[in-house]
Length: 505
Image 1 (cartoon, rainbow, N blue to C red):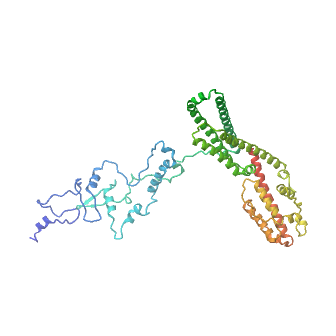
Image 2: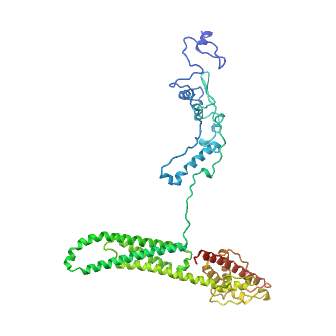
């Protein structure tokens, strides 16, 4: 029986090739599906190999989706997003479209291929044994491809080619260009320019005028109420009507107090903006110190706080009115004094001869006048040529050799400039010792490099110890002073002319 060929053909048919059968099956054998038949949805087939598994639902969906358009794996082109009205006002929400565009661009161009993890290529995910991971095989079977289908080979299934192996004409699209600036939803925000000094001063004057009018009205109302109470006849009748009068006046006092609070707060705000955005803070500091200005502001704010704490009961008191009125008067006086200082500065600038004119052949004379204008209490010798001194220092250079006049000159010119930094705060007034003269000169040279952005070549040791070296030391010192004066004078002149053109001086 073991050698019966009929029993062998009935029990274990063994075809000679995968596409043909050796003999017909036995009538008693159970039927099997055809080669190209689709399995039912409630059944599943699995191949003998452990690295290739799929579900019957996937095969059924592959056969039933013949009329439906194929769906491509990967990113889908982002559509236009619609947001609520409140969300449209936020840039962080409106920029989400650009992020989706970048993701789509990276997926199309393959810039993220081979980066590891889920973004790695299919070929790099295979293990060292050559067996494809289970997830990759399942995805290859479960996801349909429009250009290939599954084939049955003797009950087994051959997986469809992956996405990287499929090249269909209907999937080919035009080359996608990289995102540009026009891709993003860029919203240009208009930023108004900062107001100038004249505008801030006009707003401050307007706020102070409104505060003065409001305080005058409150003072007039308080005096009228006091006169009316004094004219009342019988004190008993006045006491009986106090309850009704207080009820009626309570609402009026609250309205009056809120109005005073608003106008004084606006005036304080305008004053603060004017102080902090002023171009010449040293001008205000010369009139009134910053500490004094802060004390006056805090005093007024403390009065407003006490008024609001008691809920404006009994109205604004006379002492509180006096504090606020004095502050308004002090600010107005400060503005008047500042205008007087500005006029003095304009007259001073116009009186300087070195500012304008032709100085082609009188360079040293112009710079000497420039130095004398910032050292009013010091009589500098006339600046003569060093080439005629026969290797000895001129009286002018001898007066500057200790560095003290140069330090005072630097600090004086610094106060007239807009960029007031680099002041020499520590220097020697007693220059009897050589090292003190050396340090003063080095302070001046370093300050010129930091503030005026000019580097001076000076032999400090040769000047202090009078090592002429044939007059080269004093010639270099003379050229350094001339260079410093020219740089500082040109910068101050440019700043003053710019301010004069704007009408702020």
